[in-house]
Length: 196
Image 1 (cartoon, one colour):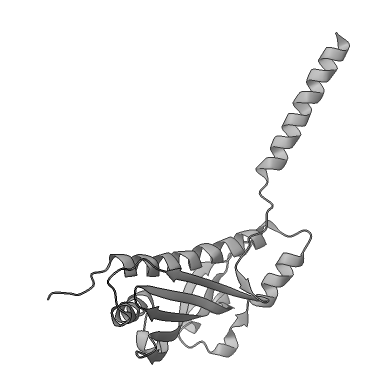
Image 2 (cartoon, helix red, strand yellow; image 1 turned 120 degrees about the vertical axis):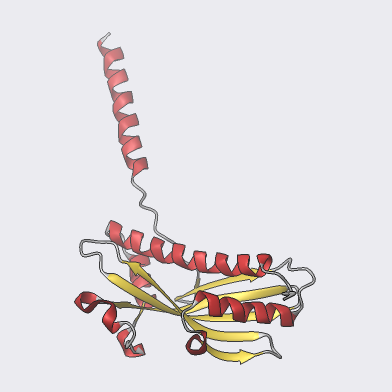
């Protein structure tokens, strides 16, 4: 009888311990990289009956709609090659005790070909607004931004890390994936020609 009760108690204890370990999500957030640099790349294909020129023009429109000032955002336009290179931004609240507002800057490269297009996002840099708030954001310079690549590599190499680091990279991954999904959706759902 005592052995039965002891066995049941040990079984319950092991199930509870396993359940507690299972509840903690300790897996590191994996971002796509090229070498040691964060590098997102997606090919949008199955865009039947859409020429390189149509996809190029749609991509320009998406850049103008997605980022505040497309004239400042778009740095290189090459209609013959179907390529656009520019920069993008998004704001987020960094997890942690202070929950500071940060801005992420990155490069966007789009290449359009007949019936398909590729979008790449890379050179991620962040800036903390601090106590000055958004007043500094419009006057920010490249020197105000810090590369996130070394910070991310340090995060991957840590044996233990604060939950805030995991949440931080999950926010970045979610924001970037939303941008890519927005591009994908725009190409697939916007009309090929506007019969205005």
